[in-house]
Amino acid sequence: MEKNKNLKQFYKKVMLIAFPIIIQNAISNFVSLLDNIMIGRVGTDEMSGVAIDNQLFFIFYLCIFGAISGAGILTAQFYGSGDHDGVRDTFRFKIIVSMAIMVLGCIVFAMLDNQLIGMFLHEGGATGNIENTLAFGKEYLFIMLFGLLPFAIESSYSGTLRETGETFVPMVASFVAVLINLVLNYVLIYGKMGAPVMGVKGAAWATVISRYIQMAIVVIWTHKHTEKNKFIIGAYSSFRLRKGLTGRMIKLGFPLLINETLWSSGIAIQTQAYSVRGLAIIAGLNISQTISNMFAVAFFAMGDAVAIIVGQMLGAGELKEAKKSAYRIIGLSASIGLVFGTLMFFTAPLFPRIYNTTDEVRELATSIMRVAAILMPVQSFLHATYFTIRSGGKTFITFLFDSCFLWVVAVPMTYALSSFTTINIVYVYFICCSIDLIKLVIGWILLVKGVWIQNLAQQPEGN
Image 1 (cartoon, rainbow, N blue to C red):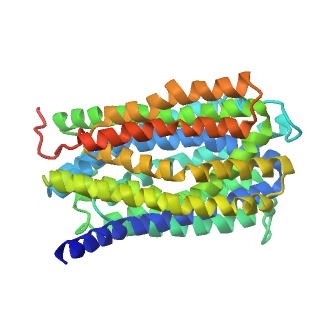
Image 2 (spheres, rainbow, N blue to C red):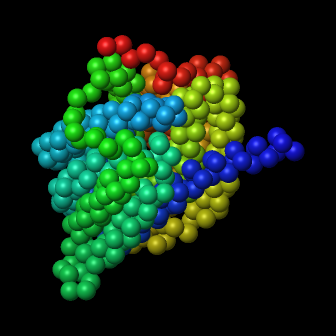
Image 3 (cartoon, rainbow, N blue to C red):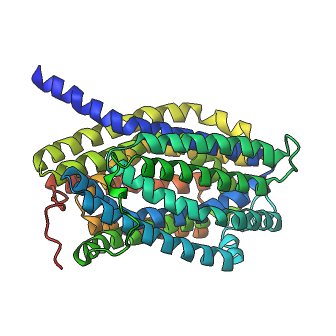
């Protein structure tokens, strides 16, 4: 009885952390879906241009995520050990690094817009116009540059709040932002309520405005509730960081930054490799990924849950309990992936019908979604495993496990099969996704061996 009671309390704790993240991600992805549909109903070229830009911005977003994640590992463990000064230092580090990446991102996107978008533009099939797609992509990209600043700041604040157990406020901020984004999309894309018809420009401005609002909500709440957020007291009084701690954050964060940069760019290069078969595959992948993200919100949240719960347990010195908790959350994540994958498989043909696009694109999107659905349990296991290994600070292992595998195995295979064979593109996609089964075996071995289990909060900082 006592064991069952403890188990119920554990899963209750998991859901208290995960549920707000699930709601936040579900709302964000639902509005992204509506945003995608709104652009898709304008035309396939517009949708493809925006989809290409989102592949590029995806790299930027994950660079920010990777750069602050090393500090985030220490944030969770410092909070678990009651060290608010340590949390404050990690927050400062996040702000400094995210601002630097934001400036670099703006320079790269502004100077290399033609080259970056042009990588994805190839003739093939009966769908799409390359010149129009490039023009729409450039319009959208330029406006979206104004949204990089609020994204960087909000990520630093929300990441710290989540790592200290506050998941509700980021959820509310996201909810408000996506509702505003949705309304502005409708008004600006189609020219409603007296506004001009702006198409992709309207979609970009709607996103930028909503991001500033999301940032404002999180920042204002954090500074108004200093009793809950002790790390923010004096956070901006100085940006001087303890030398030893800074070195540890760089040591933890650099592999994650490289990993996320290489992984996101690897995904973009994979998409570029698929695109040699024509613009239809870009449109089909865009639809499929947007829908797949809707079904994946629950197991994505399990990654955050395992990082927070296991990270805090490691920081508190509860090493055996941390390992047991990681197993439970990973099992739950895989089960969730199976349920939602099954649901997505059978509903896949319904979603592409909403888009104003060609039958070729609709058929591709349906087939790609079904491939993703079949492999969703594998992806859910891998996602939770990645965050478990990362929670103990084994960031170099996650680098090998994630981006190295992608670049050494998946990217060359995708390029070779897409460019040098006549295999149907859907089968190519299935083969290239299925090789993650190798990672599943490697991930299980790493979990069982427990190489990730270590208490970082009680390690000496040096000078």
